[in-house]
Figure 1 (cartoon, rainbow, N blue to C red):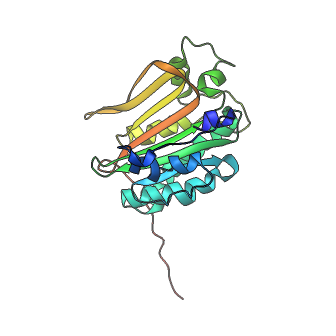
Figure 2 (cartoon, one colour; figure 1 turned 45 degrees about the horizontal axis):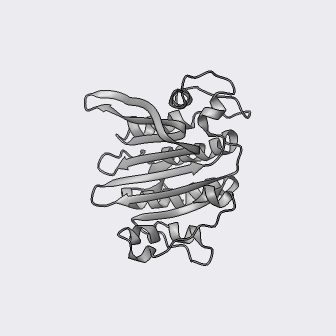
Figure 3 (cartoon, rainbow, N blue to C red; figure 1 turned 180 degrees about the vertical axis):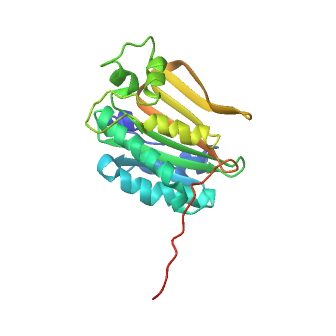
Length: 240
């Protein structure tokens, strides 16, 4: 929707209230995103509605909207999500530094029946393969994504950005919390899942997509039953 809107094509829904996914379409914010006349739905336990997030407001979005919503569903202190907060701040940093644009889309959904939380962040910039190939040769788009996910990888696009976002995100979502990461960019899809019950690390695989994604979509999935919050050190106050 956002992509074709940027091309000057009008987006609208018809009979959305009668379809089987009517509640999801409305509460996820898709209807409001397609029409400025509609009021965006309120955040609730099941949905953090889809939203266009400008980079200069992205850290505020992560800190004031995404983290409180996650904390409510994970039933933990927001301070115990400091690691995840930094991960998603880095994702938005990479949108600015690597995609050539200043805005991304973000949304999240909690499925109470499965205990799964899904967080999506997308942009319509040059894509990970396009950025990687500026400096490195790769055999496929999913191989380029794999390279970008390695620890220490960087295209050195801006001073101070070490490209740590994807590696840190995978380490904390998949390896620490038994979650799942799926990255789609260009003609490639790269998936990271836990290695196994008795193994550490992650099992990673790449494949060709059936269509081209013009930019990058990062989908992170957490299971509330497996989530391990950060340790929160409580300060002791002494009255004198």
